Length: 512
Image 1: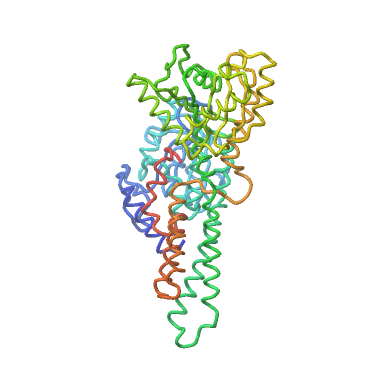
Image 2 (image 1 turned 180 degrees about the vertical axis):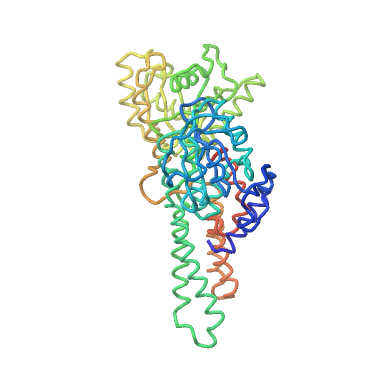
């Protein structure tokens, strides 16, 4: 990052955090025995290991007063522990010399620390009283204040330790709840996505330099022939590459936020029973009375390492009841928004003739799925429930006959009462969800943030501007390349980062 840009980002962050910028030699504590004002405090501290009773709690300190805090609270008046080496010490209150706990302390001199600043860690016992006492003691050290949410990571970004896409990957890693989410977040945190965007930025900078050089010096015949032709090729190739990157069917975003899976169908088909079976608890009321479910019941599940948000909806039927009609409206709205719809049918109500059964199911699907989705069988699973009420011969005949009907989505024969066919259904569900999310470890890195997509779409539009004005007005064409470069810079934090810092860091927890 250019020094001027970095200084601008730091000033914006300082304004947000109410920090007064002072020369390095004036940032140290005054040693007057009283705590500095919070607005002047350059050193921050927080519990980094999460709240709640635990065996060990980690309290992190970062900033110029870290050494003072470590020495005064760990009894290290004349020496510090070797960098990144744990030392067992009694941790005391610097005001009263009272022993608060006995634990490990670590020293991380800058710039070789997470934040790039001098940092220290106190590993203490995880009881609430111990944690509160240590935090209170740290607050009494001059020049220190509690950290805001995400402030340690923010300082790491400002010091150039992490790029903005890596920061977002770290945030996703903290919030990851499934194995696939962890893998995707770890891959982004490693910088792979940032390196891809930075490579595109380097290519655009080269293109822009050549175009501007042609504008400035072509009349003096100082520019080689064919320079603009090379730019044309590079811009076209880059535009194609970005468009291909955008055509990922939102797999990365879907994996990050969870696949929207909706259970839909007629009343009393067993939708709520299926929800309860999958989440293994009575999340929805099950009753023989038709129309029991009136609202959307939602629960989060981990299916083979992939996150899904499973929604049970009201049975689809015409009803004079105003409340039920609202439930049906919400059900249809959820189906339209769904990534995958589980259409549940009462298998015991199927016509005995296989031809009539196929027509019945096709008509049923047309009444449940939106018109645009009826031909996309990859967004639907057809679940025939209550097969325990069918004879084995009838069930086998239905499976054999319906599997040959073209246009029907995959069928799963299950019984929520006996769990028959449940394993096969879970396998099909996992395969569908995996297809929708993709493998986070294979292929090129995928988009994970809506803001990335928006900036890349602006980048593609800007490159199209270059091609549109290439022959008519080269200055306007160059502006298109410049706008594309700005769009990429906003993703990586190289341009305009001060405008989006608060958005990026608002979901981080205190202590990270």
